[in-house]
Image 1 (spheres, helix red, strand yellow):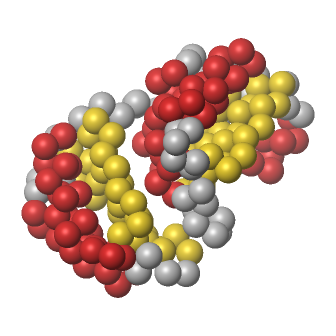
Image 2 (cartoon, helix red, strand yellow; image 1 turned 120 degrees about the vertical axis):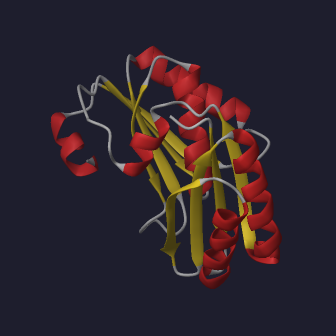
Length: 182
């Protein structure tokens, strides 16, 4: 498990690729993902020691300049975030379902980390923007009270930034819902 994960989102694909190259050259970090999200948007995700990730993000921001939309470093990221983001997690019993939609790709990762740390919930998926017009969403499961608490904590922590566009909590979702989500 990496100590920190850094995320950058750009409003230019060429500048996003150039910035990602600089991020990788400037610090000892591992590239987890770099990809266009939708027309004109690009995201890069790196991991490593906190200092290396922070330095890499700073250098990527310098190259990205006015084309950088957002960047974040999450030290001590919850261990369930990356598998949920990369589609590597296993889907078990879905007791209740929490869905949080975010305004952009990076914020869905932040929300997933907040939810996982806030309550006894399982991250099912963190979808970052592909085919979503640059938005993202998080799917969590657990006891209904835990799911509600996780989403409330995310809303509270992100209130000033207005990154959450909507959310729903479904108690005992129908088994066919899992078929359309996963």
